[in-house]
Image 1 (cartoon, rainbow, N blue to C red):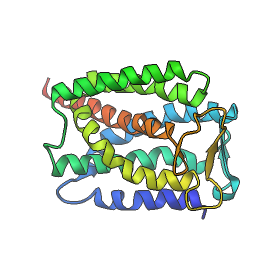
Image 2 (cartoon, helix red, strand yellow; image 1 turned 90 degrees about the vertical axis):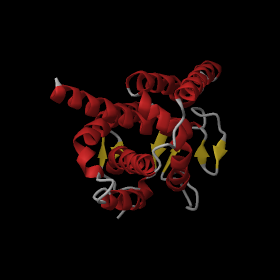
Image 3 (cartoon, rainbow, N blue to C red; image 1 turned 30 degrees about the vertical axis):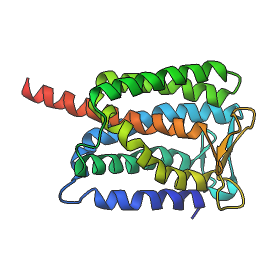
Image 4 (cartoon, rainbow, N blue to C red; image 1 turned 90 degrees about the horizontal axis):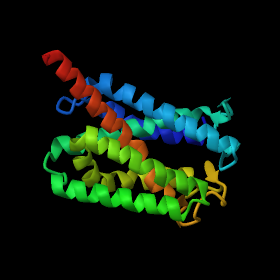
Length: 232
């Protein structure tokens, strides 16, 4: 079994088992969450395929199964299901147990505006670094969409995201080479700023922000839309 797959199985095991916990009952949200994850997966896989084809990042054959689809290892497709699901579990668990752990509307509006402005500035300033440029171009689009269509989610997400960075640094750290001889996947140095935390390019923190927020916002939109349909 490949290291990449082992990391994904480890990431999924706890959240999947606890999805049936009698209080949280995340499994009841699957009909909204799983389609949201698949839509997010479709968007990010296309991004992944294009960047891999253009040589902006690559995958180490030592650490994957060797099964490739459109130049991406099988594990990479699973990554876009497992990681958003695991983080969605963490998000809903924190939200359930600490319902007041969120920003108020004014702070949410201010922080959202600030992130959008800074992101746009970063994309303009570092347009020569393609991964940096795209990450900071995509982030405000997803954040603004989430703010307008799933504002309550953003209120919680902005407060909870620093907590989600804890497993991010562990998992993404391993995948980018922390504690192992070579990275599971790595980046063309011409595509990134070159600023790393441990082995993680700083851009990944903001890529991860978008990857985790989008399925949560879509889940909220699907769930509220379904409830409105039932009550109409």
